[in-house]
Structures are given as C-alpha cells and as structure tokens.
Length: 188
Image (cartoon, rainbow, N blue to C red; front, top):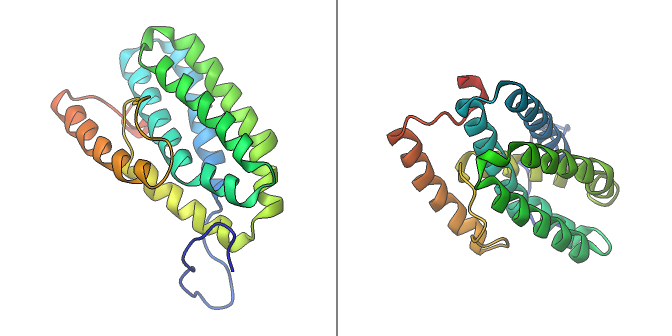
C-alpha cells in the first residue's frame, strides 16, 4: 500500500514506466535556471514573462503534489514542507515585481538547491519507485493546468489548491491570450 495515497499505475507488462517526480522536477529546475540566466543576460520583457509563468506553474505543481508527499512519507515532513511553502510564498510575492529579477533568480537558485540537496534524496529513500512515477505524472499534469502568474494568497494545501489553482490557471491563460503574453520557453 502506498504511503502517499495515489491510485495505482496502469499495468504495462512487468516494467514500471514513466518519469519519477524527481526526474520531472529536476528537468523543470534546469529550465528555470536556464531561463533565469537568460533573463539576467537578455533583460527582455518576453523572457521575464516566460520565467514568471514557468516558475508559477512549477511552484503550483509542487504545492499540489510534492509537499503533501513529503508530509506523508518523510520523517519530520511537516516541518520541511512548511518551511518550503513559506519560502515559496515569499518567492511568489517577489515575483509580482518583475523589476526585482536578480532577487527572483537568486531565490530560484536557492529553491533548486534545497530541493536537490534535501527533498529529492529523502523522497528517493522513503517512497517506492512506483509512487515516485505516479507523483511525476501528477506533477506534469498539474503544471499544465496551473496559473501562469504569481498568486501568493491562493491556498497552498490540498484539497483547496487542487481546486483553486486550475481555476486561476484558466483565468491567467485567458489573460495571456488576450495580451499576447508569451508563457513557454519554446515560444521565445
């Protein structure tokens, strides 16, 4: 039985298929670091916009699935998740002022280091591979439905964030289309 309370994976022969939550989030982290460096070097509104949108989606997905898994599966997980959520709230507030780009990029770098240095190793130790893949699938889906703008006052824990964030995501995406705002690195 799963410690992180997820439905089973569909059967695919005798092998486990998919990317773990660590693989998915590490890829997002690499993209965020790259976008941060590009934004600092380029300083275009378009690159800043993509950084903010990508980071907003990433933080929303972590709040919906990573931190609840940490709370459930990791010893002292409540303390770790609360600390990470507080840092994410500060980052979301900071993101509301795109003119503070250097501070945003530095906060992203700290976030990536904390996840890679503490959270990911703990999860890989404590959570079975099948659950890590299920979490990875959910993080990918949540990121696509997530807001593209920072919402520091939105709920940070399930079930409310799983209801509110996709609604905010729809509103943000309508605003993005209406203003021709670029939100994906592939569109730069």
